[in-house]
Image (cartoon, rainbow, N blue to C red; front, side, top):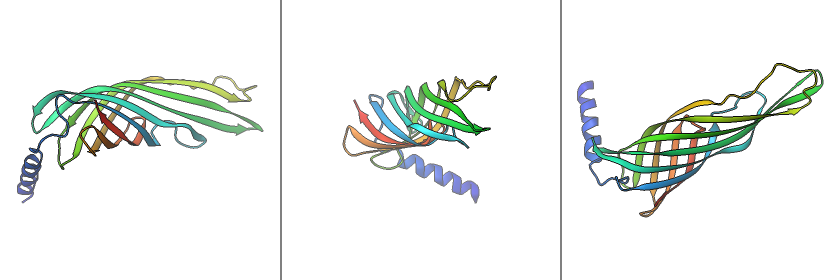
Length: 186
């Protein structure tokens, strides 16, 4: 029974996705967005100073890979946060700025008319700068820089109002858990 249900589900998805693709091999997109639920600098004592913002570029790379199209592109994201604590009457902390630069791969499979549904992954580099704040006199041996490799898995959807302009929502683990924005086809 389970096997029949799974085969039926995949067959239905394959038939539905045979509609004309919303994302095509010739497409080039710019997608600016704002994030909600930062994946960086969370926990006790942290406050967001710059909300997670991002912009990505994507272009079609290979079509007819199963029922979908592969896209590739670049990503630039930025966020800022401040951490403060008090100890023996002294308040001190750090201001962080994080910039993620990365390359992304997408797999698009249209499931509903006017919706471009996709999933993908990103690999990049997180450039972190940290600046001390407050009174650090008498406190030594602490560091705050943590630049390094960054990665993300994501699922997204774009709804197009016309041939060139749409709304975008993306869930994943990058600079934020949820990114909302616009999609503009060049």
